[in-house]
Image 1 (cartoon, rainbow, N blue to C red):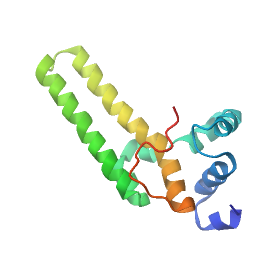
Image 2 (image 1 turned 45 degrees about the vertical axis):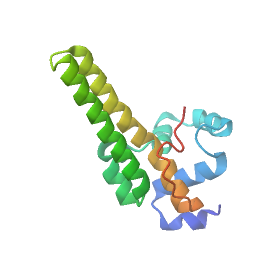
Image 3 (image 1 turned 180 degrees about the vertical axis):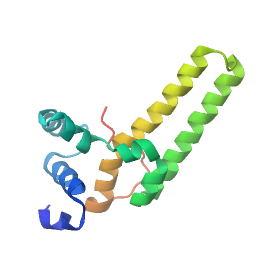
Length: 139
């Protein structure tokens, strides 16, 4: 896509959109090769979103990704329910329950961070706004 199309976006989004246009979706071999060639800080900027990590569904709503925000919110609630059940069954003093619940929370926030940029790219550049929260997650 032409760089002028991106001019209405901040520079960080222009760089992300240009990279995704040139190398395709996360998870493809061309994306992976180009991503590995980037300097560390550039990989952080293109591959994840710190704001999505910190604010999760709120950030998705702000970007206009309300469908993915609702699915992500449901995933967040489900992880809280699982953690609550673990604490109820194993007891709050159990270290395993604590560890598992913390890892569930971390996993959900990392999924927010890892999918936000590509989800916004799909919405703004490709015109796609699906309910698939995991779309673009690099595995």
